[in-house]
View 1: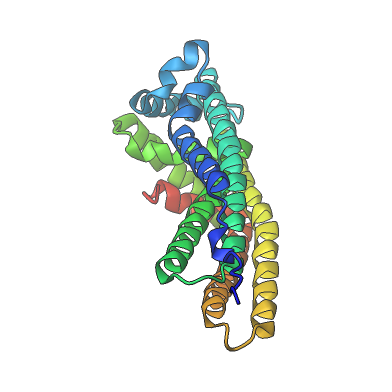
View 2: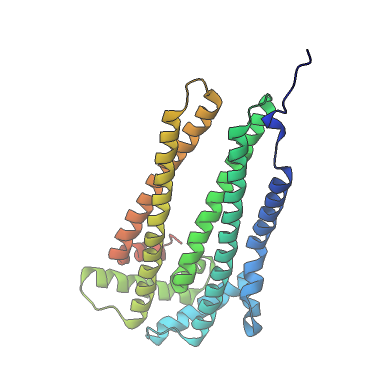
Length: 286
């Protein structure tokens, strides 16, 4: 009697789909590095694509803004802020698309891993390694998307850390005055000048956006954690390969949910009392 051999489930691998998604992810990573500067520039702002020029122009415009004493940004600072807004919008869009591609790729690899019933330890290790790499890149894309959302919502506050790369005596004097104003307003001994109010209000907005963004992300990771732990509880003890992977992903989801809850709490506290955080920023924690 001839023995009928059915094709192994491990023989079915979505090679084309994985290749297309991987190539698309690679192209988006490259775009994430080069496209924001090119697409954010327009006309007379094209020189801001150069990092050195951006920092110098920001430094000069920030000093001019502070000396004006007005809450409304000066024309020079408005130009830099507008560029930074466009830069973050472009970066956020690319990062969001990249995240969706990586989620699709990760889902494909996960389904392949679960239905892979054939032999081959190398194949299993390769699937797990690829899946872990995709998850790592997806977390990077997620964080980049959130940071870009912050940068677009509060471009003034998000560009302030670039001042740490500037070397200017007038900037040092300006920073000293800002620190003094922050110290005085924290102690309640003096009312902050309008220019400082402009800085503080955008800094608060910056942290409120991250606070709001952290909530749905924490819910997603919490839901994933609960789902994976429940799935793990239903798995048979003999399915060790799948159980190990489920444990690692469930534990990672739990840690990430706690991390974003912490992000929410920290940013909530900073938005409620922004002066100490701003003081640390201008003290060198760029």
